[in-house]
Length: 437
Picture 1: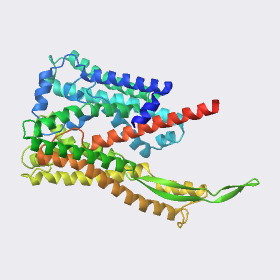
Picture 2: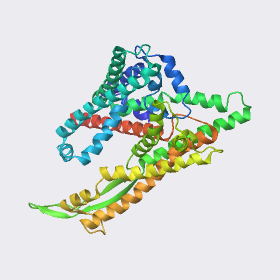
Picture 3: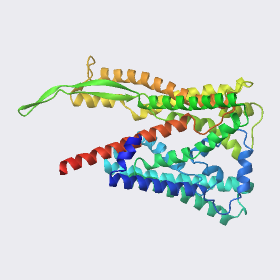
Picture 4: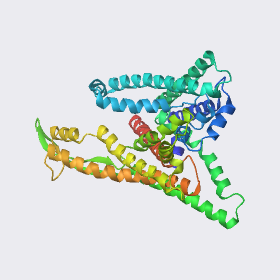
């Protein structure tokens, strides 16, 4: 990785792109610390300190702490992420959007434009909910229509501006801009987490105890990172053979290739969906300033991940089982709408391709479905292991950190994809230089 970056800085075009990306990320972090006018900072601080669970922890990780600080970028790019997921689902459900997606670059531009509008709409709804819902509880220094409108405008504009920065990074910088903004937000919390771990498990302890604790912390983090890398890079390759055919006077075709099925076919989406669904009732109750009573209180406690894996409270860990089932369900569900074995089988048949030992058409589709189901299950199990490791240490030892399984999967995935893009641009640059010579 260091060698790739070192070589990249030797090429002016790539060096300029890296510097541009770095400068944009500085703007992002500056905006995350810039407070919204008219906000009562003490209210926000006291409100989140009063939360016994981690209802807002998931959102705060994605926003790099700007949500709990209620800064200009408090909503960050979460509306854009939600909008992108909604558009992916609607593309499958609405034939018109599916046609746009198949139109090539023009269709993708139209979908991107719709995604921007949906993002602004979601940001407007979320900022209105926060300004009105928290405003009458003490969020605003003065609860008036003018102040509410000002906060809504500031938060919506901040989210739209971040979306614009992400798109500029994609066009003029290195990698996927939105993903890089998300990663820098997550990484910004890591130093604080390590300080917290040091204070909790090592500071003031005997040298032997502190050393063992340090080794365990480093080992757990490294183990999780390795698991994420293996999970991200693992794939099942299905061999495909193309029959020879005569075109004019030439015999073409006959080459062998493969269909790569990633082990983690759905990426981090199943964890995001499952976590969001589990935390939604907790977040709603927090907004309504209620913790429920009777059975409702027990259910809310089960849904809160901060109560899982605690030694003296096994009943709350039932929520972890629900979480695991949701991850598996969303892994299958999301893959089913993004990967169509029947369409692939039909395309292979039209192009004269076949899987050795499997007849073209429906048998090929059934074979791909069977293999895909195995791969999805293995990927879902891997996701669960990576996600449960920090949850277990949080419940058993109180080691609450932001760089959990979801965060590490995002960080590793984006870093590897960005390095691939740098290497590909360097390769293209070398080819151009070779041709010019």
